[in-house]
Image 1 (cartoon, one colour):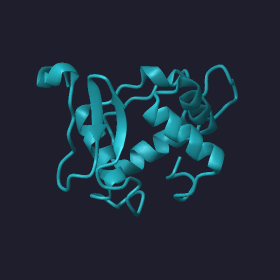
Image 2 (cartoon, helix red, strand yellow):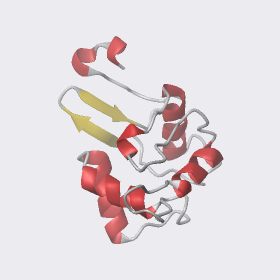
Image 3 (cartoon, one colour):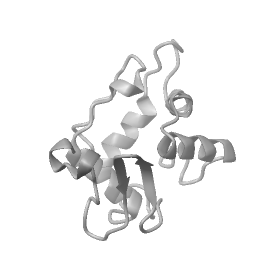
Image 4 (cartoon, helix red, strand yellow):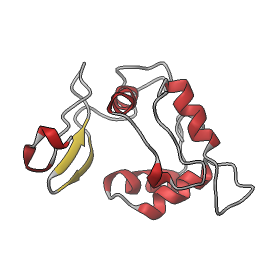
Length: 135
């Protein structure tokens, strides 16, 4: 959404994005997904604007569900690392500037968390019970 809007969100979009990321709010994710989709059939939003961002970001291995189910998106660890580098400002080729402050926690729930801000890494991925095999 930041890419599509030139780096500025409305207050409502910012609120939804924060809830989607920090609270895993599905309703917010669905609203934003539809906002970035072609809606000839609202029951099956085609996420064309999200695909444009993925293409620009070089996230070639991420596959969006063309039938509108954002939860069926397939993403590789390499593409997740690319996204974190874009958000942290390590790579400014797409967004132009960092989206996140150093050490800002993206998501934290009991047993799971990921944060950004450690220069040069894709960052502190931790899994339940600190089991690296689960990441």
